[in-house]
Image (tube, rainbow, N blue to C red; front, side):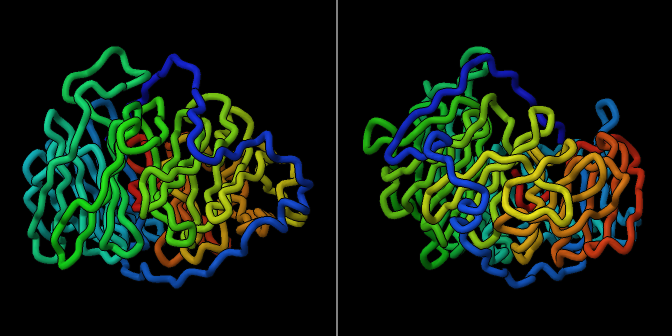
Amino acid sequence: MRRLVLVCGFVALLLACGTVEGPGALGPSPSAIASKLPQPIAQPITRKDPGAQVAWVWTYAGEKRWLVAVDPAGAIVAQLDDVALASARAFWRSADGATIFLAGASDVRAYSAHGGKLQRTYVNPASPPIASAFSADGRWLAVLSSGPSPRLAIVDLRSGATQTVPIAHDPNAALPGLSGQIANTIWGTVAFGPDSASLYVLTDWGGPARITAFGLANDQLRQTATVVDGQSGRIPSCAGPAVAATVSARANALVVFCHVDGAVWLVDPANLANVTVVQADQPNPFWLSPIFTPDGQLLYLHQAPTFGDKMQVVDLVSRKLLGPVTTPTHVGDAGPFSWRMPVAYAGGTASTMPVSPDGLKLYSGTADGVAVLRIPDLKPLAKLAPGVSVDEIWVSGDGRTLYATADAGKRLAVIAEDGSAVKIVTPPAQMGGFIASERG
């Protein structure tokens, strides 16, 4: 699926709401920064299905598109061609990494991530889709539709049963950065809670923003709360079409990152109008790529290398921002945040979140391989695949294999996690990005 790039001719605005933390409050030394970061909570390795170890990339040549699967041995093991994609309006990867979904106008098709075989077809009750989310337990798929009467659909992936509810939408909602108001266009995203029984829908964030909470008590979808900016509460806005959202149990918050102004919203699930805004340093839209750690404690914000590769980190529990600092790469340097480095490529609106599944390492692509950085202080631990100019990185479900787009999307590097082997694969066409369950 080709990514739509919108050129927004505006100055990013900081809209304060609740407590605001920003770069102006900084000033600690690197050693003081290290002492402030919580230690990571090691996560169990749960994505062990063979399909979860296979990387899927989308490729294109002119108007034709393909989805291509590459396994840890460097073999192309599946390919969905332009015919299969002809009616697809979106494609997604399940939370466990084992399934690839193609959403068409009337159905949602599930393919094995291991071999590309069609496994099941579901009725698509929400089209055209503008956002999706999978529950952590693998049971539910949530799809948010656009149009004059947007709807939220919940698909039970076990039984195939679906439930739909209307989503309130202001037909005059602002769409800043677009050329005029486009009829029937809405901005929206959806995120499940870690309990797989709660979910949140954010719509109209250009203003007036709306947050709606739902629950799945007794497997029945019911709205539990809603808040609209200026009516039942005060919530921020985001002046562009892209946000990233997740729910952190550790921070007890719905966390929303605005790609336009770099603001991070932390929304209280019990009182949706209670919002803390942490303002990151982002001079221009889309310079930062969000990377959430799987323990829900930290959000790293990686600045695109074109604009000077830097890293910031938000401690989601304490609501504090640290950085920006130059992203490290040199093995042997002390942490944290005190290195000089060559240009690296992991920023921008990345299609993945390159963190090891145990939550202990972050991977940063550089012009000379992959830098392995320790969480939380980003101390460089190793360099993998030296000599390969790396763009984006996807990590296999078991963490044993890294896949990296290289040479501006022309080649794919398959890298053993311990650095013992590197294989170079040439896909049939230009790569656009990975199909990942964790999207930046």
